[in-house]
Image (cartoon, rainbow, N blue to C red; front, top):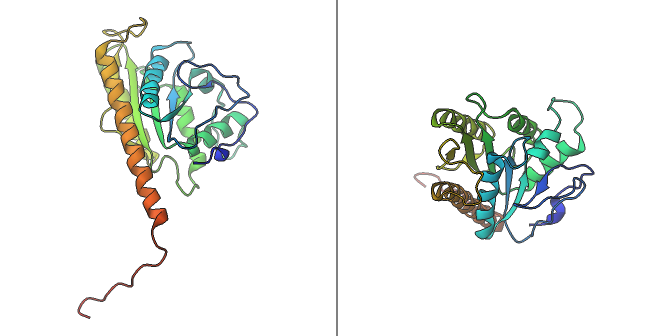
Length: 236
């Protein structure tokens, strides 16, 4: 894949790999030979449980040989409210260009009163700008879903909402979605609970597996002969 397909933008917020901080004016370099997983999520609070969970999943993806990029809480907070028909800002253009480049996406949201965060919903709304693409919205991309919640009930409803949004955007939610109950397993300590590591690893594993299979499938289609044998009529 050609990294030149990643558009430049003069103002981009919160672009980083796990554990990295980048200036708003820089785009990370994506290794052209690797598939790209873009993580979108977080809150306005630095080091939130949601963003840490997303980082852990992306780190697992990187260990599986994938390129990763996080659009975290800082980025989402700087993203203007999406209004159809209004010219896009550089930050919005950056989101669109990066998701267009992505081979898979991981969405991470806290549970706010039983629903996903407004920051993440605004980012998903902005993806309406991909509707006219040859590969519209999140078509052909695995979508991993991660939810952090202070209790099990809210986590389940938000996970359902994330899956519904991914379906509406023509994405392919992975069979497994991770719900982290921070009441029982807080993510403040350096040591990650084994149950959380297992859940996030399962999401990243399925995201990577789907991305590789889909990429291999589209490559075979591109390499197929241009001419197709004529169909033989029934009874001929």
